[in-house]
Amino acid sequence: MSRRLRLTKFRDLSIDDPFFDSLKAGYTEFPRWFCSKANEDLYVVDDDDELSGMIYLKREDGVVADVIPPLPAKTWLKVGTLKIVSRGTKLGERVIKKIFDTALDLGAEGIYVTIFDVHNDLIALFLRYGFQQTAVKITPNGTESVLTRSLTDFTGDRLKDYPFVHTVGQNYWLLAIYPDYHTRLLPDSILRNEAREIVQDVSHSNTIHKVYISGLSLQRMSPGDVVVFYRTTDRQGPAHYRSVVTSVCVIEEVKLKRDFRDIASFLAYTMPRSVFSEAELREQFTTRKRLSVAKMTYNAAFNRRTTRGRLIDDGIMTVQPRWDLRRLDEDQLMCILAAGEVNARLVVN
Image (cartoon, rainbow, N blue to C red):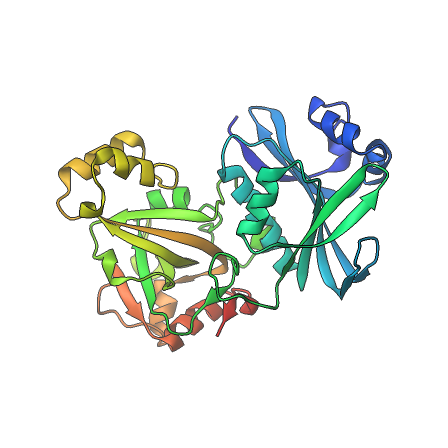
């Protein structure tokens, strides 16, 4: 079984699983706490039928008084317990993304997590996405750092402000993707067209950074530009009804084929984030004269997938120009995001 992030209950896990040994060793109260949460939800990561991660998230309202100095009164998402057995950065990204998705879904104004300083890699991951050490928590088990992230104040740095989308001074684009690649690149962006809470979608591949490879003139896009992905028809019906807009991303950088020294540098850049296999990537690099690569952050999946037909019928989009790589104006972007029921908080003007 492949690694997957899924929602479950504490009661469906065994505290005797070796995965929990380090938590029991680090927190004397862990067995009692674990049993007290029997009916509550948590996310776990299964890796070849073995646990390799757990994330317990809880909304708290008011002052966080058990840390020094206390955290101010607001609606917090507490990352109550977190353990990741990671062989790279992708699993950490999945967890970070799920934390942000949950925080926004619950209306949190801030997030906080307590971590022992020995977990250097995990701390670095949180700091990368805008968390700051603002307090300490002193317990019988030792002193933990308290990392916080505001969801109402912004730095202007796209990564530290993730998943929020800055629109001022940027261009906006509609970018087409074929169905076969869409599901692999953007698995949170399910293809069913009914409304649903995406935060409950626990797909295993919802990493933050993506690479899109194409023969299109992606160099028209610049860092910070906002991209709406348009999944083309699956051929099971007319594009008018089957093609949908599904997701919003933000460009980090765009490279052309000539920017890569050789095929090895191209593979090193694309393989960790692309939907293509190594063989497919090699074939593209060697046979395509025109090739460009866009690296982007995956900021949000739409809660409702809006069809090509609705966008045209509602006067948001016209049939021409083509919908492969098409510039949008601000009104079009906002109308598409509204139709997709994207959390309005995500857009920072």
